[in-house]
Image (tube, rainbow, N blue to C red; front, side, top):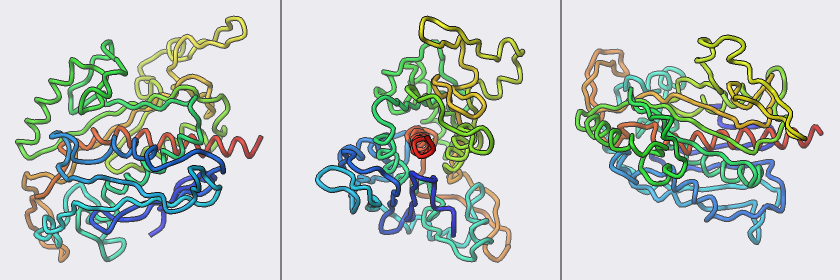
Length: 355
């Protein structure tokens, strides 16, 4: 299997499976003399880890990170950094009844056809559990980016229930279980998710990532546009089915004079009257906030019985037991932040090398 490495200079390789001993990553290209410790990395893993509320999977994992290499006396040495996260709450027997069946919506069928073998325990390598390593690596990426760059994510839609953007308050993100910026929407989502869970089903979501403090000039005009690299990174997250930058698909409804962000000069400052471009022009960061939204599909592992086939090609029925997120989009918020951080850290080091 290839495709386990991401980045050109700030490069990460993740490894591990959902129900294996553990998972982790190796990070290469990290500059020396950056302060880094496990407690800092842990703050980001704690945002993503499962079992923190009744609205996500009840799998209980501490997700405690261990730095195995690349850090000495609290500073990076410039050598590869290796991170380990051990699995502790695995219940592989939950999957024994369906080990020879393909779960609709999962990678079971394609993994079996491509490799001829698959780890059926929680999806193995295809599980979103793999993203814990990405989140850990992103903490290092944020160190490379520096304190000026602020990456914040929010859940803005669950199913067909959207937030009221007029009520947007970033301070609310840390005060609820949904990373929701609209406190008036939280109760509605709680009732909705409880109903979905009781029905044994799941629902999709939309996440928005905002990045401020980004330097002008990251990205290249043709194939390595910052838009393209962000899309590549975000679309690599399990269950993500779509992405937009700035006004995105709404741009199709706008006229030219509405969509173009007019530019003004005020003293020594350059100002934009709007940000439909989402912080990028011609594939290069403009200095405005980067705005990314992406869609996460409903969790495929549900209690409702569905039609499928087994490894012999025979028709059968399947119902997935175990502990699953009724809305995987909730925990996708810190994962989305992570992928954006990884992309931008790599672009910053590329820009530095080329300047």
